[in-house]
Image 1 (cartoon, rainbow, N blue to C red):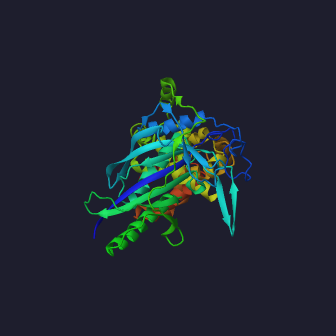
Image 2: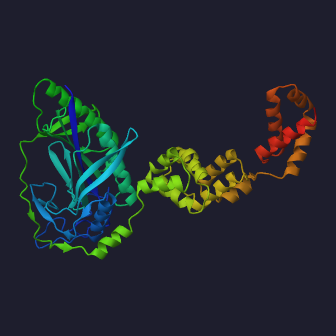
Length: 475
């Protein structure tokens, strides 16, 4: 039997702020356990939460990026649930008054655009991290209270591919906004997928299964594809799918039962009494909107129209935030976007991988990189020499100093090259005869001798042109 697949996704995103959502404790990753906490995080008696203004700004930026309607009245609620990983035993969130509603994100699939609606975005605090070892559980409160937003989609996706494209586009946009580092493998971006199957064309939804904490784009796609197969097999046997929470096992590429659900849990939400409602001013909201960073779709259009780059080059640059950031910085000094793109993608990234260098550690300044491109485009050095120079630049040395020291400066003086050509022709008479007898290899040999005589510094195209012209005179 054929089924319609119904998929909705919830994204938990840690915001890139210096301090936590409701306390002044620092936000950290991989620090010593329980070293980045204070009395508010531990819920000591008499302590009160205070809203992180920067977290609110970043949440607004995400809302604007996806076209959500902003709620100017900032309100928080308590989610009363036994949280073993939150000392106060409840979570502060926005159940009734999310900061944004009714947005959208467009993905491209099979050459066509598809709109995925975003139901809501709300602010909340993260939980602590638990480590289960044998019969003991250890807890690190460093993450407790970190500012989060939850991005809840409508159930508009119908395949693992669509879901992975949605998360990929979402992640790219969030990275470009600078609101989070979006490191799924570190947990700063966590993905929960809700999936159900229903009879083809039916308006009655099937039983929903949740897959928790998917930590990569590929795992999202693979987990959904497996779950579609699993649920299809159950329904084909005329059995019922059970409402449950599952996880994805990377080793077996299957989803595994975590716990069964029987109806909806009553979290007993009520307004957070320790945080008064905050009215966001029009000026505050307008200032956030006016300072929004350029979004991926806008960059694609600009790179195409202003820089004249093709779709392939654009996709290579925008597939990695650090590559895009470096490209943008280099373009401040350059008028050769195509050559800059080629140098970064074809040469620089390979050298960085080979030498295990991150962009944060790269010693080649954007201005110096642009200068290398200018030397190659202006034919002052050859492309082959450019590759060698680029590798030497990894140490941080100036490109002009390297070119001068290594004697790489390309010679385009026609009189100098002509003199070298005449000397080669005089020295290699047999090769000249072979050339006129139609032996193709003879020309290559003569060009090689010419480059050897000029120590590789003659402009290759100009040298070849002059050589051919002079050879015609010796028929």
